[in-house]
Image (cartoon, rainbow, N blue to C red; front, side, top):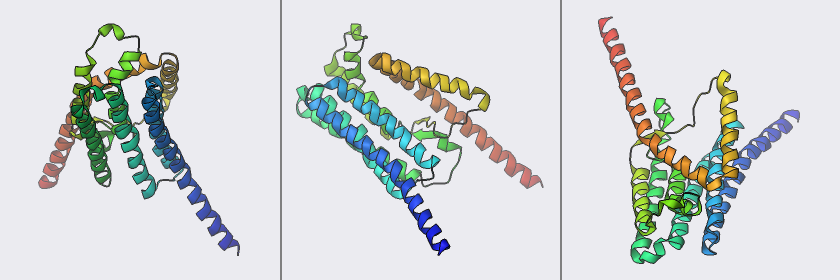
Length: 265
């Protein structure tokens, strides 16, 4: 009887661990959909904030699931569906309401292409994530969908920031940004994943301070901080690519040296 009660308790505990991250994911998709409502009402600043909050939740739900051992196939598929809505459909609608609608059918076509690229990128990620673990797990193929969702919003964010002195022609900038980000999403350019980054205990306090400082800047100088973060991220893309090929070259050399040593023996 005690063993039966123990089994029931364990099943219930496992279900709870699985449900909690999924609830967080569903909250994220609701916020993503709400960003479309804000854009429809002309409240573009709130729509930007909603997408940013959805991106933060997207970065937390998976980590929480792994931390409490609540990962599941349902959670994985739900997370991908959420990403398509929050970082594909939502940014496309927001930018269409703000600028692309003025270009007519071309603007709508650009929006559709972007959403399709987000969906293709996530489908590829789901397939590749089933492969064996290796050093390649520290990199994504192409930019992740949350980064893509924020990057396509950059012209809008720039227009409400304190960098308006740039006087950009958004009718040209917005389509170019959409096409560029769409290409980066489906490309095989290696970009940093940061999912399995190892931080020494001696430097963890500095990392914590940096995170607190960053979110403090986001709270005080929201749109300015997001613009600067986006620019830094774009500069990191070629750096991550060079780093990837350096590691790949070293890994290949180690394998060749090992094979040569085995042949000698």
